[in-house]
Image 1 (tube, one colour):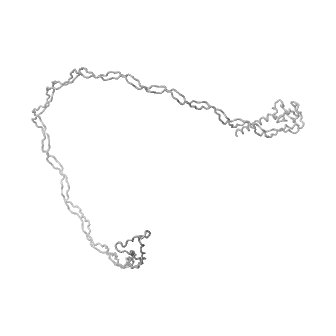
Image 2: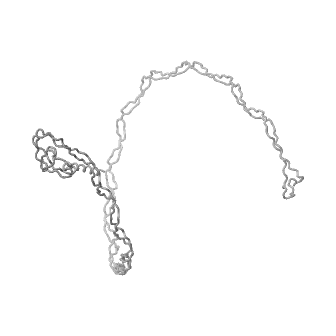
Image 3: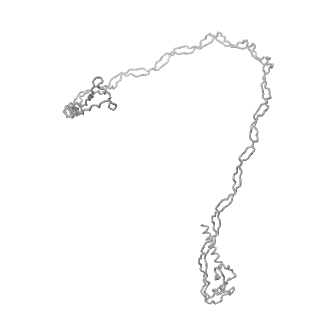
Length: 452
């Protein structure tokens, strides 16, 4: 839709542009046809000017190009797979036995005479030095502990008793009469009514059914041990036993029974209550009071006193003594010891040697074998197909548009001019201003040259 509106607008602009330059599509205006239709400067009296143009819009059919979507068939090529069976030769791995030679090292044992070293022991004398203890008498001075008396001074604390006056607290018993209040409880007995529930046996008349007596057996005319048994059937249709006698009607009996029933009544009972009685009395009470009195007492004090004493003191005293002194003296001695040495000994020993031996073995060898197989081979073949697609095409379409048409309206006849108009370019019909212009045909037939 936007494209259509744009096309119509461009078309209208083109028509208006052409209408100003062309004369009714009959011929294009030239500068030499009518350069100056009117006098350059009309004098007084030539007051009338050129005619005017009236523009009218008329309907006109025009052909415009529109883009239209059209279904179009087209051809295209497609590669389609084609599968067919073909025999091909392929390589496959196969195993076969193959003999080969290889060398192995084998151990071979043989007897050989060799000289070997063997350890042997022999006696060997040697000298060595030992330290021996030798005891001898010697006079030496030694320190011995001895005790001696020594006087010394020391301070001791001694108790000294002296008389001193001090205040002593004593407890003194004081007896006073103290008034106190005591309470006693007096019992008071009063009569009170209380509701008591009692069980009383009351005679009650009750109606009940008497027990039904057991009916006597029917009289069959038989007595004895088997008198109560049924008689023998007289016929097959007769019942084996006669019907029992009718039961008697139940009897109603009225009797009086004693039944326990609760009865409530009021009784007077003695109720004891206690009354609180207040009583004030006096009695002697002994208390102890603290009384401070001054007394002369013996006071012991600890006083330091310097004293002189004697004590035993240990000290060292040099004393000459003859003692046994043991000394360590080195003494050289000769001894015998076993010495190990190596001796060459000839022996026949087993010698194992590694000897290379060539052997033949068999092994599996993989090799490729040509095998013919029938396989599926897919090839692609070009196939032409026809399809449909949407194509935009430019289609000429006729439309009715509004076109501007200018019509020339001549001016009224002018008054005679002072100076005549110039000679027209060519003889033609007289059209306004006394000027002549060649007649044009076409849409704008009769259009004059415009004034400038």
